[in-house]
Image (cartoon, rainbow, N blue to C red; front, side, top):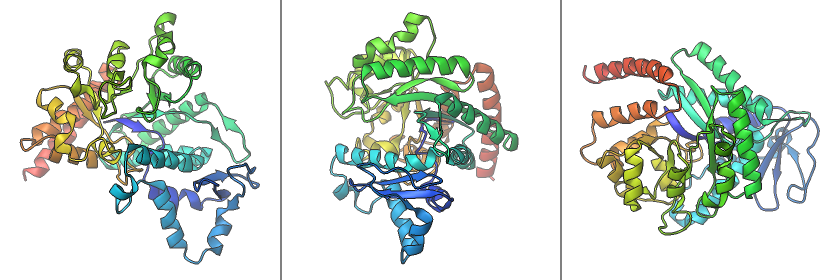
Length: 402
């Protein structure tokens, strides 16, 4: 299972470029800030101060001398991959700036309703091909639009996730399914987040088998702390509604800041899992508490490297946590933006770097079991999942030992 994924960073960017940008009615704009934007529309989309001219991409490709070179340039705009990252991304703010720009660029493609359906299906297909049988996706549920300009609400999006997943399971019966962790950006005002939490409560009530809970996403070091949102985050408890939290917390190198203290607030708010939890090892009491309460951290090693939290994975805080038996699950965050695919690349990095010289098949087995154990599935669903996984694991071992 992959338990820490973000909605628009999980399908290979080559699919977006070679498939989606070749669909009819796709328009492109080169903004005044140098960021590429896309929009599907029958007629030319409305211009703005930022997007002063929209061009039908089909016409634009006819005019360029080398279409392959143009498509490759789009691909470069869709990922953080570069030959010299240490030169281009000199610090965390620099890499996060490009990271957020990519989300802005590809959002207009993915939020087009026909693409959105295909994107959800393609995400499951790519992870299934990587032997992932269950996914939990942090989804901001931004408005999905039609060619006419009509915009759908969050309930439409959740229902679409549900319908597409059910369709995928029909042809892939071993696939367990997906759940959504509704999310909003931690840069927003507390009143906005309060409204998002109420929306999460409504969605979980209406779609209890699809919506797992709520999270705050975005660059932690430049965003608001969990403490800033304390009144909003207490709304479910005050209303007597159970809304599980899956907080990003401690995705920082700094110690002693308000952001560093997100680990404490996440635990005080009964977070189900800790996203990244990079700072946890600097707080022995909190580390002991989370271990006692069996609260896992979600480790995304490639993400931590790319976003400049750690260079040498042998020095990753998770190495210490794994060594003392703290619960850990491995996921891939936004693999497509990092130039990866599925989950195996992150498992490989954990096995080769974080796990140390003594990592072996037992390490891989325990991490796979953890991903099922700490999912938000019901116990009966976990038992079914475990039986399916064990059958696959036994076959894997048989193949390896032949």
